[in-house]
Image (cartoon, rainbow, N blue to C red):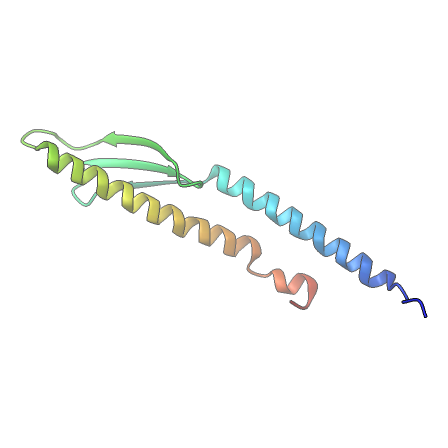
Amino acid sequence: MPREIDDAWIEEAIASYRRIEERQASLARALAELEVTVHDPDDLVEVVVGGDGAVRKVVVTGSLDGLTAPQLSRAIQQAITAAHDAAAWARRKVYEETFGDFIALGGAR
């Protein structure tokens, strides 16, 4: 005997798929606009990282008087590491804001 097609279920599946696509597009837009700015602990270096994790800008903001090359290198490394960590945290937050209530959309997993 042929299986009956549940039109209501199919329509809900299509609607759910469209909601997922809309949220994915919203997430992509939010991540494209996301920038995180972080300074090293000594406030010598500022690093801007995008939502994709790419370093967009590095600026020496403190005085270099008396600073050795290894000290500057360490400050840059600390700022870049902190910026990547902050960007990862921001990506998680944006994802949670975008998809956090997704279960409520379809009613079930």
